[in-house]
Amino acid sequence: MSAIQGLVHVHPLVILSIALSSGPLLVNAALAQDYPTRTIRIVVAQAPASGPDMVARTLAQKLTEAWGQQVVVENRPGANGIIGGEAVARAKPDGYTLLIGVPSAITMNPFVYRQMPYDPLRDLVPVSQIATNTFGLVVTSSLPASSVKALVALARARPGELLYASAGLANQTHLAGELFASAVGVKMVHVPYKGSTPAWTDLISGQVALMFTSTQGVTGHVKAGKLRLLATLGSKRAAAFPAVPTVVESGYPTVEITGWTGLFAPAATPADVVGKLAKELARALGDADVRERMAADGAEPSPSSPQAFAAFVKAEAAKWSKVIRAAGLENSQ
Image (cartoon, rainbow, N blue to C red):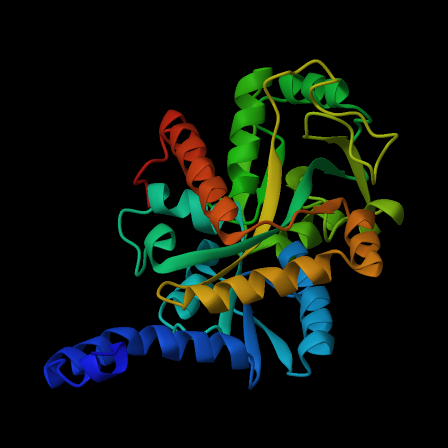
């Protein structure tokens, strides 16, 4: 009996079972092959002109050119990234609604808030890291401090008087300030804002004295003399600011902070679609013009596979959970 003839004797229910079980795989494969066929929405949970927003708009342009399908950016700021994150977590998992994620919203919020409408670590799937962002210590131009040591001396002479801004309570910009104040032994007053852009506005006007922030979005203000970049917070000097020392160089070796941005999709988005997104994102980030634009703002393109990015996010969450616990901010909101 031939193999073909043998098939005649297979019970119809067995054939139906095989067809049903393989159905989703066939559908997902077809979905990934055709993707995208309509407009893709990238949600930015921060205000327009913020670092993540600038990255999103650069990538949206490149992806639109590559795919011939419109990729649009939608800003949904507020609640330390929770509003925008929830919109994506609850969206249909088909690859057409994506999120630009940052450390505060993805790896810090789950440990700060007692209750959240979604779990960033469970309800979102990592697609790829986008960039490693330079964090900087920026002061208002009128502040009488031209170095980190001068700032520390000023803060010690005026305990509890210097105001430092953040993009929100328990945001990375807030925790960076907590880490700095603890490391150098000064007392400053934290002023949280609803996003980076309004914080930068008040910093420029002198309403607050300083801020620890991603250099994306403030580079133009620094070059224009509206803000002063005292130091960067990485382990080595940033390529975009070779003349600016690090806080470590300034004598404070435990103050080392790096930001990042990444692309996320709703959980249950087909793995083939996630993979296709990651590959196209890597191509976009390899574009010389994109790399040059990002580098000028202190961001280093850092594409990765979905698996590598998932492992990175897990490690970041473990790291920041310890910092949050030490600062007494666990379940504080």
